[in-house]
Length: 289
Image 1 (cartoon, helix red, strand yellow):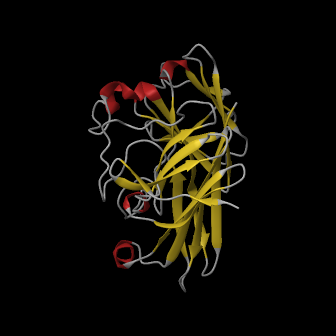
Image 2 (tube, helix red, strand yellow):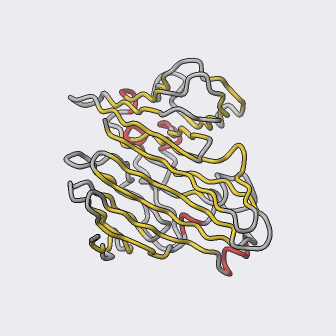
């Protein structure tokens, strides 16, 4: 029988500490359904979390996996990246199974969300951890009587030992929107090399990503390879602010741009349409090689 997981607190906020029987673990906050930590069985922390991030009601957290819904960035009338990442979510399920640990959180519309986004919805975020793998799934249901569309992303901050010793493989041949240069480009090489000349400030939306990606970190004594797969999400965002922009972020140390690369499963180019009663789901799966 599965064993229920009780609520605890991290950084002063209600949280779930998911621990699989093999020792794999993750920490999920009810604030924003925000994943702040993932440690594979026998491994080390795989996510970056800023030591200067505010952990306060109504404020976004810098690092981990912020959930972006129902609007990506400033591409619409809502607050940047929408409201889901700063709202309190409800606990539906949290348990340790025979070989994994699972939590499911839910957010539904209320008077405050309808003031800025007049739609009835139910969103569920599921997190499953086991062995060397982490699965994060977002499901959205239109619970109202009129259609709507939305954009969304899992804004995953992947830890790196050094940005210039990190590469991302699997994007060759894809078109992307370069938000720094404000234009569409073609990815000609198989590797994205953050920190290299021309890539110090990365902010790209890759379209129609169908193949698995791989983050390679060669900064330590052992090469680290992290496989990333996505389903339902058609796009991938690759982001790092670089030195100049990072120095302007109040919730991150100036040098910490070297310590992460965001690789985000996303639905941006083509907003997801939902008719009344319809459900959409998207997943990002991470596997440490």
